[in-house]
Length: 263
View 1: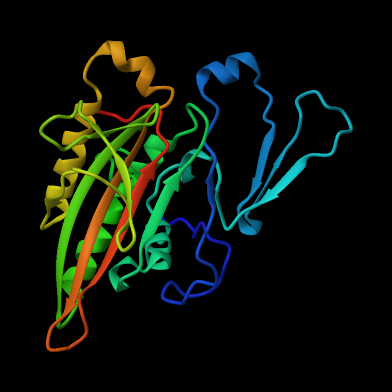
View 2: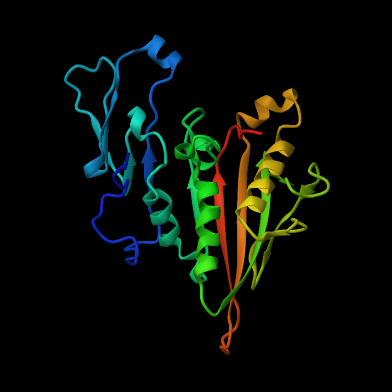
C-alpha cells in the first residue's frame, strides 16, 4: 500500500526548499489507558490541509483550536508507519547535508507521544523503521551515487541528563563531558569520541550499542523516562576529486527529546 506524502506541497522532491525549518506533526492513536479514561476523541486531522483541530472535552459550543503545520500524519492504523520514502526523502533533502550544509531532525513531545518510536522505530516490520535508520540509508545511498567525490563519515552519540553530557560510545560512559565553544568550530563537546563508519550496518550497531549503555539498570528507569535527551550525529567530510576547492564539512544531527529509548 502506498501512502501519500505527509507534506502539503506539490513541489517535486528535488526542488529547493522555501524555508530552512519545517515542522511535521505525527498523531498517534489512543492507548488502552486513554480509551478507558475517556473514549471521546478530541483531536481531528485534515492531512490534505496539514491542519489539526483540538476541542475541549465536554466543551459544548466552544470552538476548537486549529493548528497548521508543514506536514501532518494522521492517527489511523494504516498511517502509523513510515513506509512512504517521502517522509525521510523530503526531510533529508531539505537539510542538504550531503551538499555541505548542517542539518538537524528533532523530535519533540510529551511523555508517551511516540518520539522514540518515530525516531528509532523497530527493525521489523520494515514499515515501522524510524527516521534515524532511514537517515543512514539516505546518506550512504547518496555517497554511492556521488561522482568525483570522496566522503569521510564519522558518528558520535551522546546523552544529556540534568545538564550532564555523557558519551554513549566512549570507553567511560559515566564520565561527564564539557560543552565548549570555539571561534571557528562553534559549539562542541570536549573529548566526545568520534567513530568512522562505512555503511548502514555500522551506524545501526553504533546506535544499538549506545542505547544499551543508556539502559544500565532498572534504577535508571525513572531517569530515562523523564529528562533524558539523546543526540546521534553523523559528521561528513566531502572532497571533490580533481578540484581545487577545499573539503567541506557538514553534520547531520538526529535528535530525540527522548524520555525512553529502546535498548
